[in-house]
Length: 119
Image (cartoon, rainbow, N blue to C red):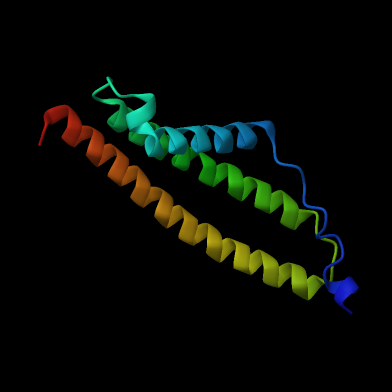
């Protein structure tokens, strides 16, 4: 029964080049923020620029990861009830991810405006 339900879920589809580049850039930005004192000791605004770049990369990675997950879900060939349940759960996850994405966008734009006008 387990083989019937989970048939076609493994292996997952490969990650696209853009998603790999985005995840790699996010890792580099994260490491730069962690080791900022060693890498950027004489650059005063490096933390602000890297934080802004990290937020932008987080905004970009969410739709890419959702697209990858949707392609994985579409390739599933199990029972119909399992496909419908998985798609319903995926859509609820998309709603949650969209709400978080909009919140990140508001924080990013608000922070940029505050930084430009020094509020």
